[in-house]
Image (cartoon, one colour):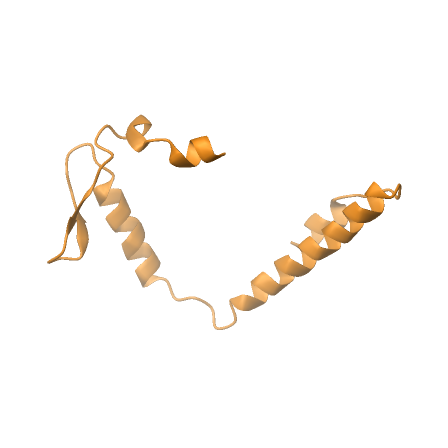
Length: 90
């Protein structure tokens, strides 16, 4: 996994280095660059309104992971484990 994360982006676009324009607060668009794509992603994130209770989703996922972990511990002790109960709650 670290190899994929640290891999240069030149396999996607040849000009993978982007420049920053401090006056506009945006990446400088250049030919064969990811700058325009990054600007678009930033704009989409900035325009997104998070739900009032977005942390509730985190609590549900944490609960599912805890339940799955408990089932795995039981499986390690010789008790049968299924992933169905985990994925049905997500």
